Image 1 (cartoon, one colour):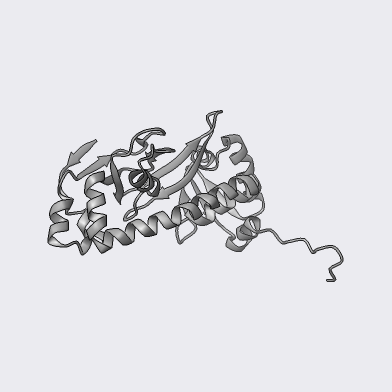
Image 2 (image 1 turned 120 degrees about the vertical axis):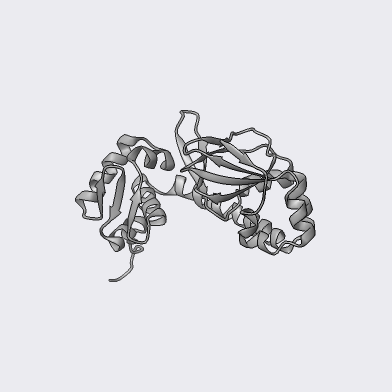
Length: 233
C-alpha cells in the first residue's frame, strides 16, 4: 500500500471540482490517497471511522459476515462514490458496522473527519454529495435485506447478474466470488448456474459468465404472478 498526500485527483471529481479556494486549501490538510491491492481489507466491523472514503479508481465491496462465516455483499462503492456507511459513522460518531475490502486494485481518497465536516459546512458540492449518499443509504440497505429474506437464491443470482454485468452481458467473476456476494456456498451457486445454463439463459467459462437470454433471466428475477382466486383468464 502506498500513500500520497495531495488532492489533485480528487478535485477532478464533480462534488470537489467547484471547491472554493479556501475549500481546496482545506482539502489538502491531512488528505491521503491510498493505492490498495486487490482483495485487501480496508475497514473492519467495530473500527472507528477516521474520515470520508471516496473511491478514485477500482472498487470497494461492503459486506457482512454471519455467525457461520458466510459473507453477503451489502453494496459496492465505485469511482466517484463515497462509502455511505462511513459517512453515516462520521456524522453520528458510530463504529463501522460491516467489513470493506477491495474488489480490484483500488485508489481511495480519505478525507479526515474534521476536514470533511468543515467542508460540509461551507461547500455546496460536498453538501450535495453527503445528503445524496445518506438519503440513499436506508433504501439501499432495505433493498438488500429484502433480497436476503424474500428472494430465493435463484432469483438473487439472476438479480446479481443483471445488475453487475457489462453492456455486452458479460461478467468476470468466479462461482466462489458469486457465493460470497450472495451469502451462500459455492456448491449452491454451481447448481444454480448449471440450471441457468441448461435453460439457455447464461453461458459460463472459467472465471466468467455471459448472459444469453436477457429477458429470460429477467423472468427468473420477477416470475409471473399467479392469478388471484376467482380471476378469469
